[in-house]
Each structure stands twice: as structure tokens, then as C-alpha cells.
Image (tube, rainbow, N blue to C red; front, side, top):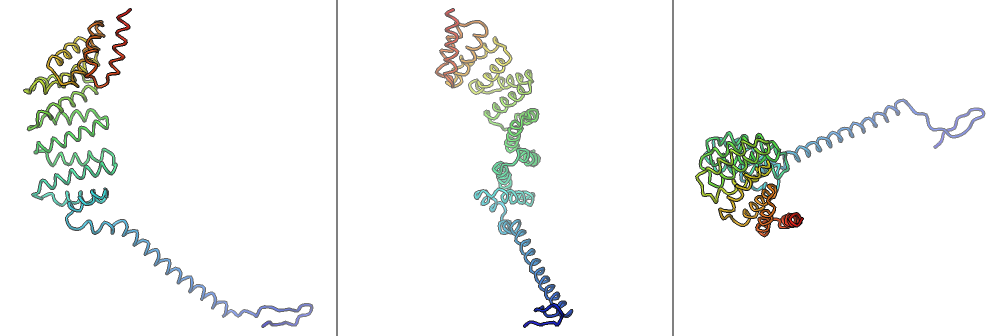
Length: 305
């Protein structure tokens, strides 16, 4: 329906006049709708916040109940590293007075596995290892495992000074097997040489050679000493040590390594004929025969001149 107004020069349809009461009514209706939407948005936000909290905490809730160590084993098998780490940390924290020492040791070992598998920085492993070191200070067998692991981590970080400290403590433990004692001395000497503490490294290897163990077991300490003398260009010492190794009837691998050192030292001493002979003897036992083939060819050319 249209209304008309009588106005000279104008005619047509116009909208009905709006009353103030009608305008306020529509505004109130709009405001009511906006308030309803705000309530809905608040409800949706609370719901999303609840879901977020549940995803961060709630999903792990069932696993964090009961036997933490058993649950941690399951988490490790499922490669759920973050969950496994939290479970193991809580188990170790809450079982400090536990009489089950083997379970605590297992938990520590699992924790180190988890940290490495999760790709965390080596420093994270060191933090756990330092705590373990304090806990097992009076347990030489387990201290040996911890100190060796710490030394290896420090080596990987090129913190050779700290690695020296760990290996020094390691070889001072009681109850080590002959193999552990030998390895400890060799690794300690290697770190000392890396720090250019040549005299200290040589003393460590001499201590190794003085150990009350069969000569065959100590042969690699003598090889390390010959190798380090080679790096210091002490050719006569290298020649004498290498010959001692060969005279002790070592296994094939050591024979090849010592034979190469002896031949190299003889060449440096100007004894090319003897060097050629030793290279030829060492060739088949050496891990990389092509290297020796090059040295043989070089010496043959030199001898023909």
C-alpha cells in the first residue's frame, strides 16, 4: 500500500512515516541478536580453550596414572618420547626412597635413551648424567658406565679437557675389567694428545704398558704410543716400537698397522730399501692395501734413480 501527499509540483509514492517507537524497537531487536551472538561466541571460545587444554594435558592423563615405569616402557616402545621423559622423570623423583635399585637404574638408562632418541642437545644428557654421577658415587660398577658416557659426550662436544677429567676418574675406579682398564688408558691418552699434552699422553700409555696384564692385551697401547711418536716425527722411536709390536706375533690387523708405521719411519730415516720391504710385507694385512700400493710404487721409482 502506498500513501500520497498533496504537494504542488510533486506526486508519487513515499514510504510510510517511521515512528520513534518503531525505530527503537528495531534497535532493541538488533541489540538482542548481537547479545545472543556474543554469548554464542563466548561459549565457542570456552569450548576451544577446553579442547586445547585437553590436547596438552588430558591426552596424557590416563598414561600418567598407575606404574610410571611400566607406562614409560610402553611409551618408549611407541616412540612417544615426550610422554616417556615425563613419566621417567616423575618415577625417579617419587621413587628416591625405593629399595628397588635395579628399577631406578633401568629408569635412568631409559631416560638417556629417550633424550638421545628425541634429538635433544647433548647437554641435556649431561645434566641427567651429572645427577646420576652424584647418586651412584659409591657404586663403582655403575659409576664406570656413567663416567664413560659422560666422557664420550664431552668428546663429541670437543670439550677435551672435561673428557680428560672423566677418563681419569674412570681408570681410577675399582673392579674394572682388563678391557675397561686398557680402553680407559687409551682414550685418556688420545684426549691428552688432542690437547697437545704430549708428555702427559705418553705417560698415560707408559702406565698402560706397565699394567700387570699379558703383553698381547697391551699391544694397542704400544701401537698408540708409536702412532703418537709418528705425529711428533720421532722416527727412531716409531721404528723401535713398531718392531716390538711385530715381534710379539700380533693378529693380522695389528700387524698391518704396525708394519705400515715401521715402513713409514724407515723411509723417513732414509732407509728406502728396508722401507720397501716392510711395505710389501704389510700390504695384505693393512686395512687399505691401495694406500700401500702407492707407497710401494713411489719407493720403487725412487730406488731406480
